[in-house]
Length: 298
Image 1 (cartoon, rainbow, N blue to C red):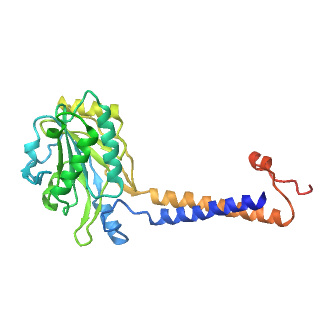
Image 2: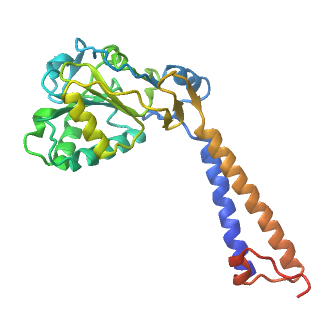
Image 3: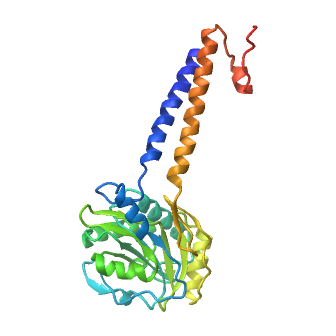
């Protein structure tokens, strides 16, 4: 029994070591060429953020490419309905996929609020090497999953060059880092909702989008209403205060501390069990369940 318990604890310790290593080396959200590191991460952190500019107008004069390969001005998509804009990139293997998946689920649940009728949805690629063909394939997948008549006209998957896309994202406070030499993208997680007149109405931070709250925000934007600033929350590896704009790296250190404490606890427990076993003591399942230790005199 003791040997089996020791093997279990040893396995747990190995897993803790592995988790500790992951925590130490966990990157911020990165492009397909691998995570940025060292000095580049510090540079990326200085450029990243999601600043709330409620009431400001989005820059509609920028040129982007739609999923049909047509070069259009962004303002040609504005003026009809409220708009949900999610900056991301289609080949992302990290947080972007979670954002798109959770956003899609929330939008599907809105049975009485439909893309193309109440609002427009824009997925904007912030990786300049992505193509219209890729955007078209991703849109086809979304339309299939969304499965709502008439949605095609209200769903836009856009690509564009770095300069033009950055003009657009900067107008609604989304700041990200792109290294053209390594093709690495580092960015925060979140989306913005604008009114039909192109004014910024509401921000959502992170990757979770509550359907009732998102629906309320879309309907408010459709009425040309401007929402309130959101409270600071943890976004991936970046803790952003949307009011002050201050950013700190917290999650990596937190994971390191927690994994380190777990590892130390397991090592100490294994040592304790080994000494007891060497002395000929045994531990019953009841002792373990109750958190007790064997009587040395038994």
